[in-house]
Image (tube, rainbow, N blue to C red; front, side):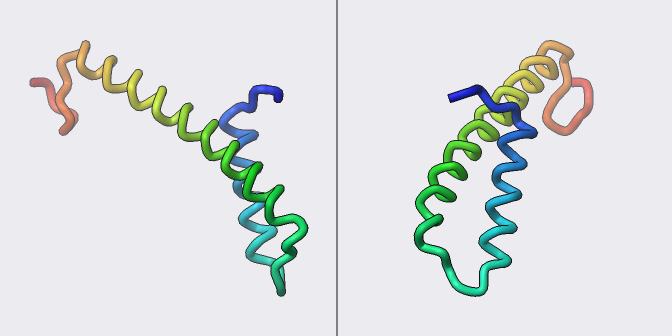
Length: 72
């Protein structure tokens, strides 16, 4: 499977959410595919968000900034 960017994965989540919202009745035949793709996209997004949070934490810790945004 090709590595997705955050933007691509987020787009998959948005598209599937819209599909599910617009359905008058559930399409069970497509549900497994939607769930599988959504879980994979969620994992990509979560991994990217966690990496950014960790990088920000390290950068802020290295700069002497506490969680409130003030120098400590």
